[in-house]
Image 1 (cartoon, rainbow, N blue to C red):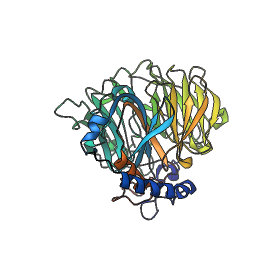
Image 2 (cartoon, rainbow, N blue to C red; image 1 turned 135 degrees about the vertical axis):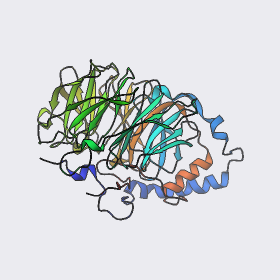
Image 3 (cartoon, rainbow, N blue to C red; image 1 turned 60 degrees about the vertical axis):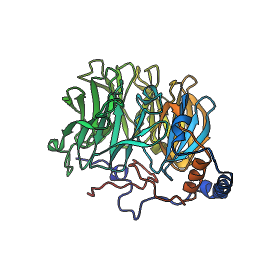
Length: 433
């Protein structure tokens, strides 16, 4: 049987050090400006800034897109009304696949949590202060997580070597917030070739809040999880159409709960469209390949607010493939001019924000117009993004911290995240095949 290409699953295997790439030309050109910013911030100071002030200063009712720059562990804050960066924070970590399915609607107070994949597990940071309030070690470097629609749980897929799904209490008012409330060790299922488990990869949650869907990269299955009780509801075998192995690895369900997209690491990448009107028993409708006009390297996807349009990030051809979900056909390819691996909707779900990692920018896709309407410069190597209606405070001290991070002069190295594809995340899995 054909095994998934190792370079996409393990982009940094065999590299020395932390796997980070050198400074880009843009970073070199802006380093002088950053140094000037450090000096100015240090001279100006901020006598009214204390560590505890940020909670009060965080703005509520302010739609904000959070972009995680994997190159230096900073966060760019974008105002979707103006499509401008309105602040940056050095947070000492990065996240490639932050929870973003229901987060924009759930996160409207400074104490609400952003759930991120970082290091060997997942973390929760408050949206207002960006301080860590919970962490769960999964024993795996490759993690994906999503909140349930009511915000009560976070469902986690931890790939190899853990091969485990977790349910975490995400209720900020609960005494057990951040605690693991359910565990499904799936190692015994095995996987193709020498895989020691099915490789649960990604998770998307049905809008009814009763089921979650997990593509299994090494098991060639789509697993339906019941959220409460936390157990496997059903498992569907997925056949390959290009290779012997279907290798499903990412998935996104539409907001109407009727359609789901699944990305496959077979051939040059394929995309399947699923009928989930019976949430416990999804069925595959069609599989799209590059022969159908799909871009190369289908990795992740987002679905428009109308539940009729899919946007598939295809970094192998540096574009976004647009899919008519009803017709089951590729209708357009939006040229990004660089590689993007994920994206997020703003809280109003009118625009899709796509970090173009190789260009240090975010491309903005206007859903109604069906085109890229803006390109926004952000930090180095942006990868993951999410959104909220809370905006963290920035001041001269945070500006100085960002400038130091840009120059590589931060007091500590930013904690890394796992990326798929070419990246400067610096993260390696603990397993080596």
